[in-house]
Amino acid sequence: MHESVTVHMDASPERIWELLSDVTRIGSYSPETFEAEWLEGATGPATGAKFRGHVKRNGRGPTYWTTCTVTESEPGRAFAFGVGPSDKPLSIWGYTIEPSGDGADVTETFTLTPVVLLRLYWAVLGWSRGKTNRRNMRTTLERIKAEVEAR
Image (cartoon, rainbow, N blue to C red):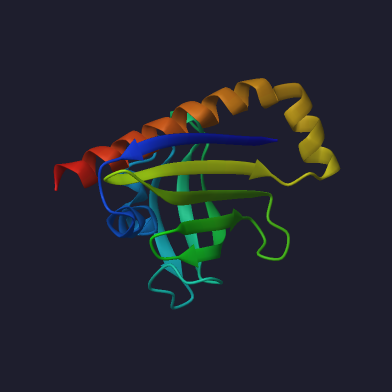
């Protein structure tokens, strides 16, 4: 119920973090989440800030909005958010940035909350969703890489 992908980027950890923590830009990177907006007066990636993402599942549908809460926000190092209720998220998505050579290794992670219904879902369909998540995480990171390395 956990997936991760790592991509090396030839850019500063701070520049990488600026892009991946700006949820209003997610549509430029993600194959599934095509837009997002800050909620409740939030204007940036602070722990506890809420935003909603507009998702087109598997790139085909269904299409829906999902509310997220920032759970970790450390400039140049980490950004993570929970999907669903802030007190009991259904999943956690996150990024860690580790300096490496002249750039950084960026890891995107997905962790599904281990509740009974989600465990059942993962046992039956996890192989398929896990494959999709890994492919989409790699696409997201490669798109961010292309942008930060072009500057």
